[in-house]
Length: 190
Image 1 (cartoon, rainbow, N blue to C red):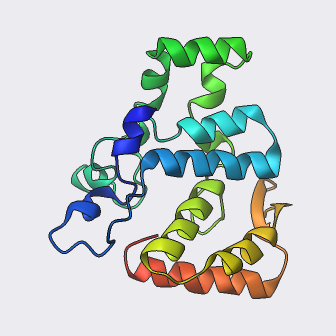
Image 2 (cartoon, helix red, strand yellow):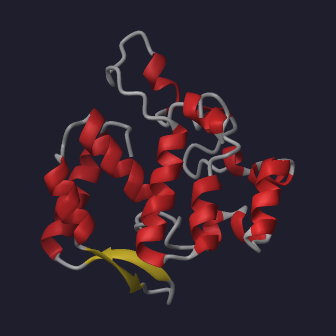
């Protein structure tokens, strides 16, 4: 997990000659911990939390840049293909899973938990974490007060597919989030 502290969540953009992000090192480790904390806040389910924490453990140095090279710019899944193998080959993680009575299959694919991850435009802990981070630090769309208002307005709902999903209580906060997220998307940050 510690290697993730040196991998930037915003891919190779941090090291561009014209760095638009300033000195903000937003690491994959920070992102992964954030995702786990969001999942814990809404579910208190250890399996989902650990799956969220470990979801980017196999990330390469420039994160999703390789997905563009592999022709999967839209889904960006090749970087997650080795997650199972990385976890399985970690003696330390496997010992912790055993200690906590968790199976590798329960934590190696966070996509089995819709609160952790699901396809856009559905809301999930993963999407929520990086959207809030990018909106606060890089594009400066939101301050902490508005992020707190949006976060406090989120609950678990049942979606049209009969799955649990994160959703907003109020139309106002949903529109605030969508407006900001659309602005980020336009700038390649979502």
